Length: 235
Length: 347
Image (tube, rainbow over all chains, first blue to last red; front, side):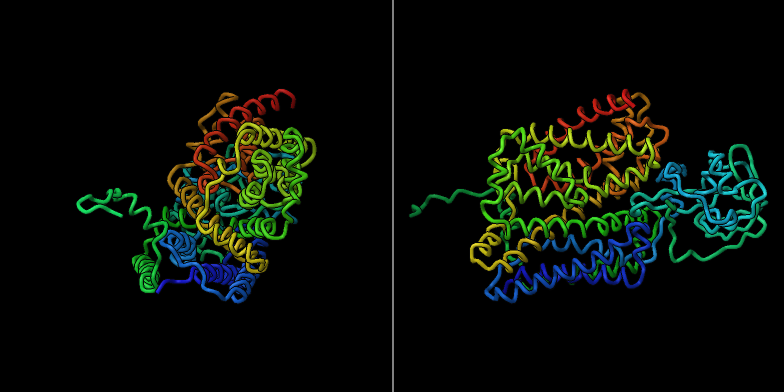
């Protein structure tokens, strides 16, 4: 007996609606989308659920025998299940040092000219990188040598840092992970070494070394990866 | 009647396979086995931690994020497409079709302002408009202009370039070059092309038409909606996979350092845009970050990305005939390069 294609199509639609609902409910969407595109998840949940309802309504009204599912269509429906399987494979994945080595040089998003932090001590990775080359922004944000900062990031393994420092970084997202770019800040951790992708909670003071700001680490402790591993810039 | 002793013509095995693939019906048993196999594959891959390597994680994250971001817009496009197919009166587009082509194409391109979805959503709508009688050139112009001209995209471009004069310049450059490229592509590709020569036939379309002819609009709408969504969705999955594969395997710096000279730098950033497959509503933030490239090259990235990228190429391949993408590139690439040179000269 053949499979009614309409039931298979409806099933895929319902699975996607549930998936978006779970992303929305659990907040897991932060692993895939930036803060400015988070609205896509509730929007997608509602639109997909409505589409599933409309389709179910149409199916119930038609009632007559529907088209049989062909091999070709079945393959397409299974292809649509692949992203769901991908999420199940690595539910807590986050971009790390490997992606940082593939995705740019840490200077991305500087041109977005985010607004200054409300307090100098709230300076983030991007603020510090912006302050390195933009004296007006540095003055406005109060970012200068001696400022105490607190940063949480992963060890990127970048070699483009002043000697004797290790870079910790965070990915910034404009829209989704596809456009994520790493922004790193060098940390002087003395003689301590850290494995790539180790999350570090760093408190220290900024020092100027050449063109870069370096955090002179006063307290450096290994930390758990935050629930929202990516940052978005302020505009 | 077949004569005794004369063998029936043999059908090549690949044709038989293709026919079986296209028309072979899946029985409940086979479907159950396929589904079981799929679930088993996921369980085994999960147990073996196949997705836990850094390269695999990067691939899976980029892949899923592109799909998650694009699918709701595909659905919005499918909604609009189904509404056009079912609720738009048969003669509603006749008046548009009677206009001279020189008016139709720019008119269709400008109407993209009113359709605030990214490029994934505009493809099913354009396909449906062409199928319903809109001139292919006008349909193409609409499809290419709406991801560039829509207000959300222009606003995000303005913000990404910090507003003020620089933001205004980039918005004006993007809107005008995007409009010109869309009209030129519409005119060059669609001028002497019939809808049947441009659009690929889709499996299941006869059943949709049958539902429509039965007069039950609710059923027809839901059939159109879901078949458009699922049809486009699977190609978005494929395109996102290709883009993620390139992003996880080729360092971005290798692509973005390809060009130094004016024309080469534009071509290099167009290649980057093609590979990254970013949504047009966010690409300006990336374009603005290519500070080592000229503003003209950044403009090339902004205009070319919504016209052609890896995921769109797969979608175009499923929607239009094979030659479409090549002709689209042949028309738009030189035009965008020239446009960016002019932009650099006047700004």
